[in-house]
Image (spheres, rainbow, N blue to C red):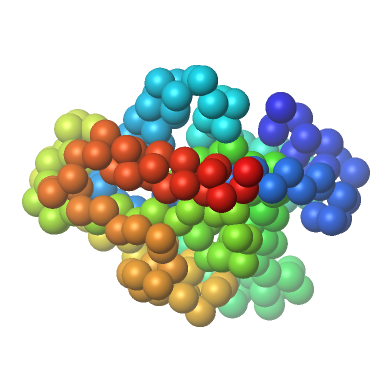
Length: 231
């Protein structure tokens, strides 16, 4: 199944979500503190899924984060950039108010709503791992989802960010604080939720106590249980 092709066609046709065929297949969302390893877990999961190739259930999964942003950024009705979407940046309230006054519309609102719509499409199609994009909030009412939250001590996350981006400790801590604040604002302002609320998730993993492969094993067991229940 070519998820991106279907989304492109959907956005081109300006269709309704009800036009997307519901597969009933599972999906996974990964919410994370900055530097806690959300993308790493996603790719460990897809690698571990291949070890269960005897089950059709574990074939054909895809990870989406950058791809979601790219699809939305290419929509000609949105005056935004791929890098802006990828950063999950939330503009200051002042700038947003000024945009509303002069344009008569909320660019921020339109941008995020389009991202959320793409997230819903992907979740409806199933067999996707959605990293970030407030996906747990967007798909909270969809029973086939498994929602995961990753946390880790600040020191560990800081070292990871320093290594990943080749930056200083101060730069890493500032980046983490900015990203976490932006993610909190999106969840609060659009869904009146806190990303720290454990009730949003099926499981929360501490990266200091649990390896990505241990997390992956636990998630796969949840999926296997659901697979048996659906038979």
